[in-house]
Length: 196
Image 1 (cartoon, rainbow, N blue to C red):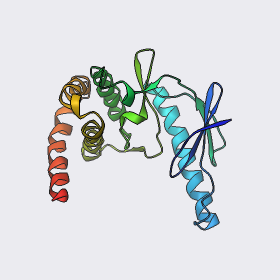
Image 2 (cartoon, helix red, strand yellow):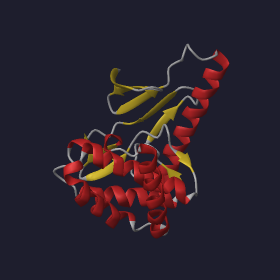
Image 3 (cartoon, rainbow, N blue to C red):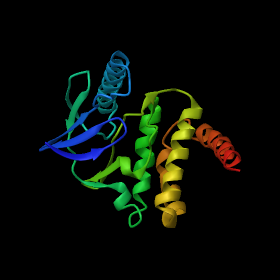
């Protein structure tokens, strides 16, 4: 297996046709607490992958998990959307459509950056559900979009407006579209207020 990425909570390895995600032991945490945290997060992420598949949302297919610290999933290949969005801002419509499916299923991605999206065969897939959770709250869905807007601002500012308009075109498939956008205005005002 070849290590391909390392984050705060997990290490990703490429294993041919699959990607293996391992949450290693954190020695600064009490052993029992560490084991429980890793187990809970691994089980949650594995069950989320299965739920996404059942909802028809484009995400890696779960291959297997030990329900403790290891998840093996499909290796999508493809390219990170962060590498192509500036030249193909129309891809944001697909991002909006997929997020609409997430929110219809009351799933919050919670780390909605273009680094966590893969373009494969002209289709956008979402990855990395370590921070994802279930919620029916309009507020949480508005925060998801706020995070995406921040990603556009920091990484894709040249195409931000065009990409966001495409995103909205796709996201309006979500039945609570208007309510989420109204709440988004309040979320952004809070963000600006905190920044002062």
